[in-house]
Image 1 (cartoon, rainbow, N blue to C red):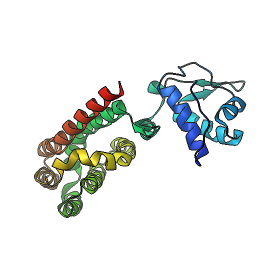
Image 2 (cartoon, rainbow, N blue to C red):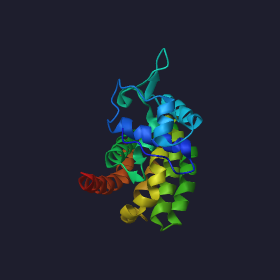
Image 3 (spheres, helix red, strand yellow):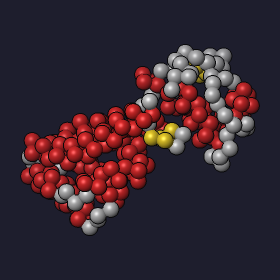
Image 4 (cartoon, one colour):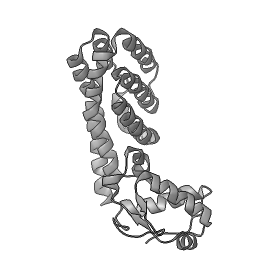
Length: 241
């Protein structure tokens, strides 16, 4: 295990991140036992309570299983973890994971039109009015990062209008993963700023109760962004390899 002493103030977070990295990168495989609390504390140079807190959080993510007798075994995170793990997977050791970022953008692009269609079916004029309020903030900004944050607000309202708890929880996890990366991604999305026409079409479709047009408009909103981001992540992935 390539663990190293923790030096930052947020000790528990750093322990969590290091063990997470070992599991996700395959250094600790499914079925492998974790070192004891005492051993982890020694290797990392931290207190046992800090290690215990981190391990409890790791267990809550589904990454490990505490078995009878006290052994803590690594689980296959692809089978047992939930979407709440995404923010931790996206940014690790100060860097953006290109593969995870690609998956988030792909999911956003596929799910967005479905959410838009449901919003048009269930939201009506009330939802359109709320979306229109956010649209006004689009018109007032030329900053790429601020534009992306406003876009997240727009989709937040749209998800509410879709009235689906599953899509709401999925959106919450995707947003939690995406939002911290907005400052870094803003420079990649300069061309998106000021492109309001597809948003206007989407708002009108929600107000008119027109799901097909809402889905098509959502594809127009998300498509260019997805192409830009996926291209950048592909280049980042090549650099990493």
